[in-house]
Image (cartoon, rainbow, N blue to C red; front, side, top):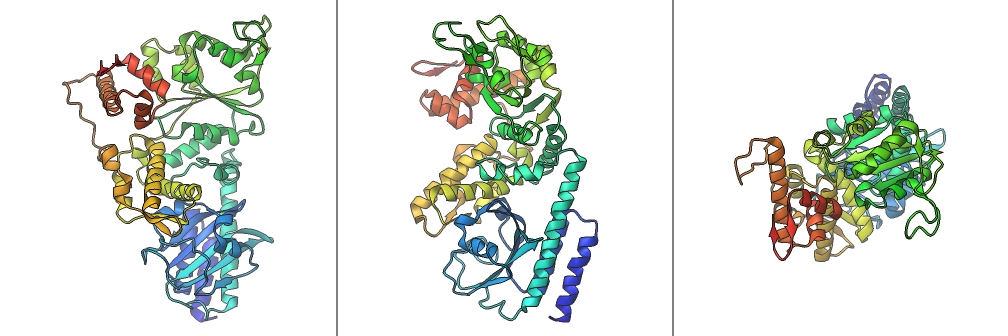
Length: 521
C-alpha cells in the first residue's frame, strides 16, 4: 500500500473522531475514497431488509439519492451483499449495472467499465455497501486487497458511527424509533417514507419526533396532495401505540345520516338496514390511533359528539343506552383553514381548540422545491418496478422543469406526472433498456403554468382586495376551467385538480357552481 494511501486512510480515521454531522462525515469519506482510488462514481448505501438506501453519492445524478434499490431487482448489488470481502466485477460482466444512465460523466448505457463493491460489516452484521465505478476498464486490478479491506473497515466504522449518533439524537428527543420505523416497514410500502432534505422538511421531522411519543391530539394541516396521511402514519409508527390499530376514516365520505353509526357503532335494529350489531371506528381503534381525514367536512351535528369523546373518552353506540369508554389517540387532518371555518360558523370553536393541542403543517412542494428531484428519484424507482422497466431516468432537460414548476397538486401530482411520463417513454423505446424521460413527456406546461414560487397568482376577473373573496374567486375560476375541460364530468375534473370528487362537489356548491348541460355559476 502506498504512502499516499496510508495518509488518506489515516485522514478518514481521524474524521471519525471529529464532531461532524452525518452528511459531512459521509462526504469526507467519499472524497477520501476518490483521492485514494481514481474513479468516476462512488456511493455509500445503507442496507435494511433487502433494500439499499443511498446515504451519499459522488459522480451520479442528483435523483440517485431518492432511489431505493431492492436486492432482488439488482443482481450486482445482491452479489456484493453476499460477498465476505471486496469484490471486483469483470469489465465485461453481463449483469445489469444499477447506475446505467445515472453517471454524470456519461449519458446512456455504461460501456465496458470497471465496477467493484466493498460490503461493510460490523460485528458480523452487514450494514451496507460502498460501490466504486470507473469508465476505464480494469481500473481496479492493481489495487491491493489489503488497501480495500482497510477502506472497507473504515467505511463500516463511519457508517456505524453515523447510525450510533442518529440513535443518540433520537433518544434525546424521545423518538428512538424514527430511523427504525422509516427504514423498516415504511420503506417497503409505497409512499411510506418522508423524503426531503429541505429546511421545511427537517423542521417537520423535528416536530414529528417531538410529538410522536406523546398522546397529544394532533391536527395535520396542508394542501391537497402534500402527504398528510403519510405524516399521520409516521406519527402512529413512532408512538407507543404502534402495535395497536391505526384506523382511517375520511370524514368527507360520511353521509350525515350514517356518520354517528360509522364513528360510534350501532345496535341491531337501531335504524333501517341495521340487521346486526356493529362496532364503530372508535371501538375498533381502542388502544391505538384513529386518523380522521378531512375533519373540516364533518357535519356540525357530529362535531359535538366528537367533542364528547375528546373530553371524556366516552362513546355511545346508536340504539344503546350504555356508554362505553375507549382509549384512543386522535390524529386529524384538513386542507381547510379551520380558524376561518370557525369564524364563519361552520366549525365548532371548542372542537377546534381540542384538536389543535399540537398542530403540524405539511409544507407544499413549491416551498421545498429542491426536494422535487429526490422525490422524482423515489417515484422513478417505484414506477420502474411496477412497469417492469430495467432502468428509468430523467433526461438532462427534465430536471430544470421539475425544479421550476409550481406543483399545484404537490407530491401527488409529481407522482402522477412521473408515472404518466414513464408509461409514454416505455411505449416509445421499450422496457428492456434504459428508458429516459425528457421534458416534453412531462407535459407540465400543458398541465399548469410554470411560475416562480415567489410570484403571486393574479386575479384578473375583477379587482378584488378582500383575501377571502379573492381566494373564492380563484377557486371558482379553477373549478370552472376544469369542468369546462372535462365537459361537466365531476370525476375527471376532480382528478385534474387533485381533489376528492365529493370534496370538489361540496366546495363547488358552496361557491355557487352547478352543472346541467352547460357549466354555470
